[in-house]
Amino acid sequence: MKPKIDKFILAIIAVVAFAYFVPFFVCEESPVPLDTIGSIGISFIFFFYGLKLSPEKLRNGLKNWKLHVLVQLSTFLIFPLIVLLFYPIMNTPDGQPLWLSFFFLAALPSTVSSSVVMVSMAKGNVPAAIFNATISGLIGIVITPLWMGLFLVQETNDFNLGNTYLKLVTEILIPVILGMLLQKYLGKYAVKYQKQLTIFDKSVILLIIYKSFAESFKDKVFSSVNLGDLLLIIFAVAALFFIMYYLIRWVALKLQFNKQDMITAQFCGTKKSLVHGTVFSKFLFPPSYSMGLVLLPLMLFHAFQIFFISIVASRLARIKLND
Image 1: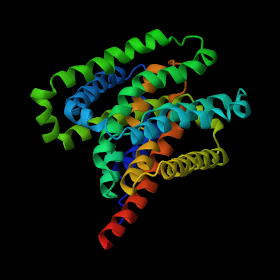
Image 2 (image 1 turned 180 degrees about the vertical axis):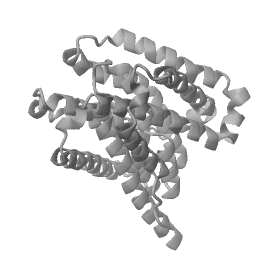
Image 3 (image 1 turned 90 degrees about the vertical axis):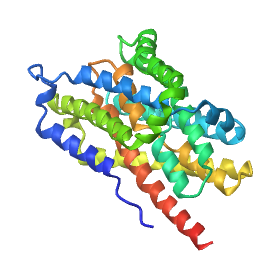
């Protein structure tokens, strides 16, 4: 079983290239209202997310509490603290924006779909993966803005945590709650058309990525990022991933997790959600901020985590088959 090239990664590369050559749609004279389309799309993403949340599965998932605590602490505490260690070094006019983009990456929740798929492929604890990935998205609505608020208040004068939460509540939390309330009636359709809903989710994310990078290319934000800087960012992304991957493994061994729980802890605890990242960037960062630079480490991390975890999952799947 060979790891397949993720088509979404290829789509992201294509969209970034399109944004470079055709930035017209972010210009004032563009007839396409990308902001409005993106906002509506985001609300629908989280409405469908709520439809897929089964209260019964969430209740049953609470039983394996040690695994859940490890995954959530890794996602929302250890990740940010590791990046925070480099703040004194990067606290310069040139280094601060890049460090902030890495801190944003570290403060994000775990991804849902790829975590569950990879855990299933590796024969890990799938119910626990579903629970942790799901609950992580809900916790992130509260925790991620709190982490970012500590530094965005200093970095930008127009950051307002109250306004940020108001936007998150109206465009994300209310749709999620509405979806959960209707889950009993419409949840079966969300499961039935899950493939189509996934395509819709990814289309909205690609739209936001296009807008972010087209604006950055138009404003020549990346003119200061040379090949050496890009390679350094890629190295930092890979290093951050491996530090978390093996740290979680060490803790899981100390807690005497079985093999299935260890796979779930490592796979879910090292993932960061590109969906939440692209959405949250719209709410957390002011319009004057370069969204392309904000999303660059996250996109590289997303590609790397899928590439590495898919290789590990394929290897574990072969070992299980041989067993």
